[in-house]
Length: 162
Image (cartoon, rainbow, N blue to C red):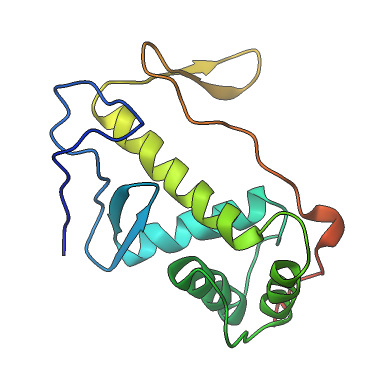
């Protein structure tokens, strides 16, 4: 089910962008920050795992139960029945005061899709910086959402690898 929005969101896309919502497939459809994004299952899982690594919640390689817990948490916004030690730890982190790791997983998944969508429509320039050995994003007239995020490294347990 692909959703479209005719209203401008706070992200302020250029007028020539027909749809502000990201679409890579119809397997997973989620709403976040007034946008509806639909993902192919493999694309979604890759984005979730990358977000988990970036937040230092887990390290690769991740076994099936850890991947399932992370993907389920992002889809549901919670993790009712963790299948792995990482999933149990994620639930524990959500119960304490402080940053909510599931919120941040979701935010990074959507931020990556939002950025891909802007690149696709020519609203963001990407250039390779030889000195840094990495890609550099030039937002142009349309600002990028905040790039910062917390680290959960000090709070993270080693993941199941079986």
